[in-house]
Length: 219
Image (cartoon, rainbow, N blue to C red; front, side, top):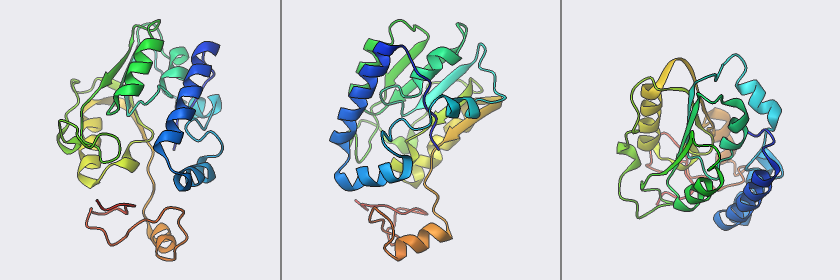
C-alpha cells in the first residue's frame, strides 16, 4: 500500500524524480526491478498520484497536525504534504540512509516545518555497519504526538523483531483518532503456496529461521 504523490512545484518534482530513478537503479538488481514494476507499475517508487493521497487522507484533517514518515527516502511523501499540511502542521521524516536525508535537507529549506533526520541503525541492505539495532530503536518523540504515521517501504526490509519494535513505537507516538499507514507483503496461505510452487518473482525462503516471515537472503 503506497501513499503518493500530489504534483509538487516543478523544480522539486523533476529533481526528486531524477534522484529516485538513479537511486533505485543503484539499489535494486534487474530481478527486483521487474518484480516491483510488475507490482506497482512503471516508476514504482512513486505510484498512486494525487487521487491516492486524497483517498488515504479522506476524513483525516491535517490542519495543525504532525506527520511522521518512517523511512522517508527522497521525500516521496513530503512532496505532496507540502500542500496538505497547514502552516501550523509539521512533518518529521527519518531514514537509515544518509544521502537521501542530505538531499531532502537541501531541497526543502523553504519548508521550515519539514524536518529530515538520519538515524544510524543497522540494516542488512542499507546500513550493515550502523551504530544501533533497529529492534531497540525508540523514536525521539513524546507519546500521542502524531496524527499520521507512514511507513511506505520499510517493513519489507525488516526482520520480525525490528518490525515489532517499529509497530510498538508507532502505536506509542500516534495520537487518539490518528492513522497509521504501512506497506506490507502479506504472507498468508496463498502467498506461501505460490512461493512453494516457485511462482514468486523473488526466491523467498520459507525455511528460514528469521521468524514468521519469508526472506530472500537468510543472512
